[in-house]
Amino acid sequence: QVQLVESGGGSVQAGSSLTLSCAASGLSFGSYVMGWFRQAPGEAREFVAARSRRGITTKYADSVKGRFTISRDHAKSTVYLQMSSLKPEDTAVYYCAADYSTGVLRTDSEYDYWGQGTQVTVSS
Image (cartoon, rainbow, N blue to C red):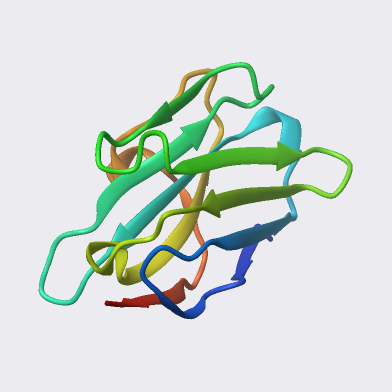
């Protein structure tokens, strides 16, 4: 049974940094592309970042490029999202996702597995 468990969310001031973690179990971590998505209240879920299964290729949403970094630790089967220079518009529930794919996926419908989400609130 595949499980993705996010952690690290919280409430911070604008300009702060935060690192989210997503621990994966029940899958061969190195065979899955890992992604981060977020959903703000009243809005659709949107792509944030993704890293290919071997960690060679990354993609970011334009809104987070240069501020967020996605990384993966294969020894721990964990994917991270390092967020810096946080803005109030980054406030959302952040979700980790996984898919058995060779590519780097930007669309939520392409992912098979999802975590429960972790709340990030950025105040001005």
